[in-house]
Image 1 (cartoon, rainbow, N blue to C red):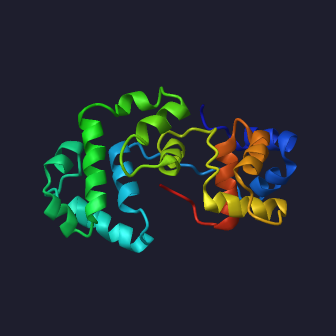
Image 2 (image 1 turned 30 degrees about the horizontal axis):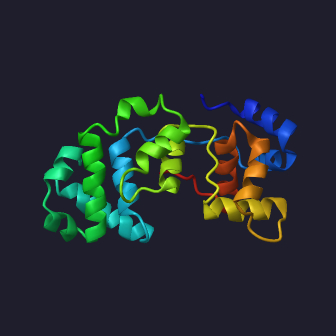
Image 3 (image 1 turned 90 degrees about the vertical axis):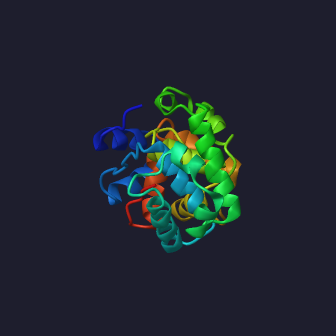
Length: 207
């Protein structure tokens, strides 16, 4: 589904969820940029797990530097020695994850050219077969790499906190409650999620 324009977005939410429509009006146009470097996106996602943004940026830079000025590719990562990968600050577990991701690309278990033709569930199933990639990472990939408009990441803590604030809930919504709210947003769950994030943090979100 192609990203709708602002008029289409407002028309949809004014008729389905006037509270979210108000949030959208306050935060300007949708700025959702796709990153089509699929392998690099997933490498960065693995590297960034459970560490600060600054540490992730440092390690990612060092990781790229391993390849003599060339960008990481599945073949290059598979050929890299574990000690070299760990030498840039990666844990042993993350090096295993990166190797498994690279193997999935090399063995064509993940075919980048086919991902955009697959359903959301098929993409999630394909990506979560890689060690170290969970559903949340796959959903961020759907949003920020494939540009899907109908993704509702119910386990995202930022979305939960934003929905609690926007709708004046006593506590963070659980999965069932968040899905019920998300039904009003369909088929533009991604749009509402993006604006909910903006309500929490004015920074334009990228992945």
